[in-house]
Length: 435
Ligand code: UMA
Image 1 (tube, rainbow, N blue to C red):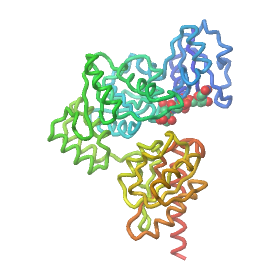
Image 2 (image 1 turned 90 degrees about the vertical axis):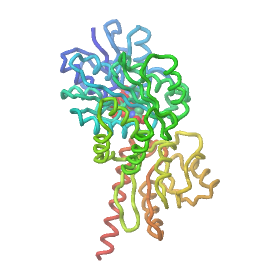
Image 3 (image 1 turned 90 degrees about the horizontal axis):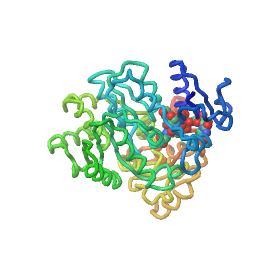
Image 4 (image 1 turned 30 degrees about the vertical axis):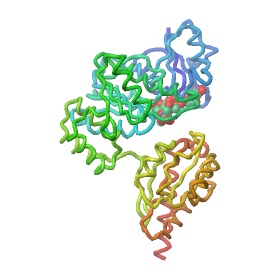
C-alpha cells in the first residue's frame, strides 16, 4: 500500500523528500511534465491502482472540490481514500512536541506569523512556515520548541488532523473566489482552522471584520473551546484598558497594524511572555519584504514596495498610511469594482495590467489624476518623474490591490521588478548628477 503525492511544487517536493527519508514507498504525479521526476513511481491518476493507495497527499494549489475537482481528488473520493496535506504528515510525527500556532486570515497572516516567530524565540527556537514559504515539513529539521504555521484556506481545506495549540483568525474579506465561488465557502474554510485545535486549545479571533465577529459568537455559544476575542478599537477586547493603550502606542512606534500586533501579543501572553519583553522584542522586528517595505528615499521621494497587497483591503492599509502618494496599482482584479479603494491620499495614480480599465472607472468618478501604463517599469518611471516635481515629500507606492499573474509569476517577482526599476532610477539620476 502506498501514499500518492499529487502536485510536485514546493509542498509536494517536501512531502516526497520526507517519505524518502522515512523509507516509505509512494507514487507521485504532477500535471506539468517538467515537474515530474524520472522515476517509475510517477504515475498519472489514470495509471495508479487505486486499490493500493492509502492516502492522497494533495498540494494546496490543486482544487479538490470547486470549480472542478482534480482527477486525482475525484478518484480518491470514489475509492473512499482520504485526502490529506503536508501539515497532516507533520502533525502525525510522534517526535514533534512543539507548541504549535496556526495563523489565518485574508490579510496580514505572513506578517503576524513572522512577528510571532520573532517574539516566541524568547522561549526557544521557533520555526515559521506553511503558506509563508518554508513548507510545514521543514519544521522537522530541528528540535523546535515552537512552530508557527501560516495556514491558507487551501491548506486548511485539505488538512484533516488537529495539531494546533492555538489558532489565530485575523480577518476575512472576499478572496480566492476562483476556488470558493463566493464568500460563504471561503468563510467556512477559514472557520475550519478551529477544528484543527487539539483538545483544550485556544481560539483567538479579531472581530474587526463582520464574518469574524460572527465566528467569534458562534464558537463562544456552540463549542467548549477557550475563545479569546479582540478588536482594533478594543470593543470586543478581553485585554485590560491599560495593556490595550500600551499596545496601541507600540503599534504606532513599530508601525504595525493592530490586528497583527494584538494577535501576536495574545499568543505571547498565552505562552507567559510578559508585556515588557514582548514590547522589547517587537521593537527589534524587521518586517517582511514586499509588505510596505521601504526601498529607499531618493531626493524628496520615498519608494515603498507593498507588492503583497493583492486585494483592495490590503492596499487600503498602505493607502491610508502615507501622504502625497504617487500610487502604482493594477494586475488581475479580485473584486468587481475598485470603488472601495482609499483614494484620499493619492496625488496621481499609475495603472497597469488587466484591471486598468476597471480602476480607471473609479479614478474618473473620484476625479483622481491618473496615467495608464503598459508595464510596472513604465509606471515606476512616470511616478518618480511626477513625484520629483512635488514640493512636499512624496511617496511612490506599489500597492497594487490586484493579483500579479497577468504580468508576473507571483507577487515576489512583481516586487523585485519594482525594486530593480527603483535601483535603475536612482543609479541613472546619480550618474546624471555626477556628470
Ligand atoms: N499542479 C498540478 N495540477 C494542477 C495544479 C497544479 O499538477 O491542477 C502542480 C503544478 O504543476 C506545480 C504544483 O502542482 O508543480 C504546485 O502546487 P501548489 O500550487 O500547491 O504550490 P506549491 O509550490 O506546492 O506551493 C504551496 C503554496 N501554493 C499555493 O497554495 C497556491 C505556497 O503558497 C506555499 O508557500 C507552499 O505550498 C509551501 O507551503 C503560496 C501562495 O500563493 C505563497 N499561496 C496562496 C496565497 O497566499 O494567496 C494561497
